[in-house]
Image 1 (cartoon, rainbow, N blue to C red):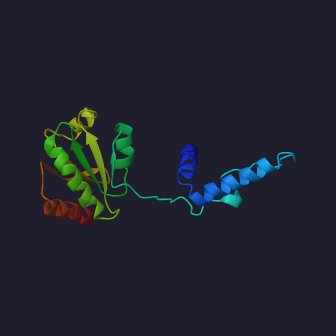
Image 2 (cartoon, rainbow, N blue to C red):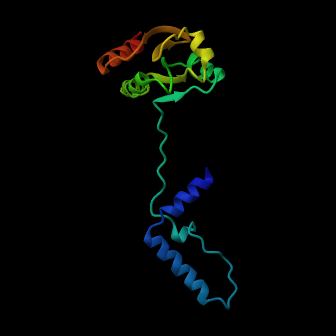
Image 3 (cartoon, helix red, strand yellow):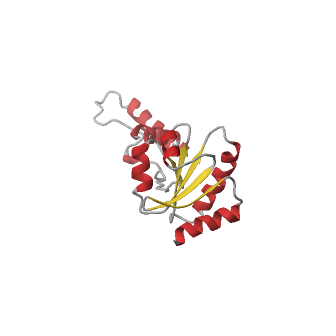
Length: 168
């Protein structure tokens, strides 16, 4: 992480900062007879970057479930209602429904979470929740299944489904 920040700072140096670096280095070279007591760095306060790096703590709309323990922590024990999207990479309708569902969840601005479960990677979860076809979306609140649907829905139906889950 620190390495990425350092690379980003080097990458975003402005011409003024580079000019400042060159002047500092040139002044060091001209005074090479005197011992140098301090090193010139592009991160030194005299040549500080003009703007801080942006810090964004954006909460993701959805997350991929990694394993059974992750599912338990992030879905079953969640304080928010969670929509669980059981999908597969080879499923055409899943590729259509996924972005639509994420957009419907994003409209709720953090009042609902969305978990994505790949049935090929997590067959045990698919069997446990009775998923026989994809895409299947299961709404959970407090670890209990509240509602579900199978197949594609249009944007209005998805919005009403998500709103209904939040309102219960």
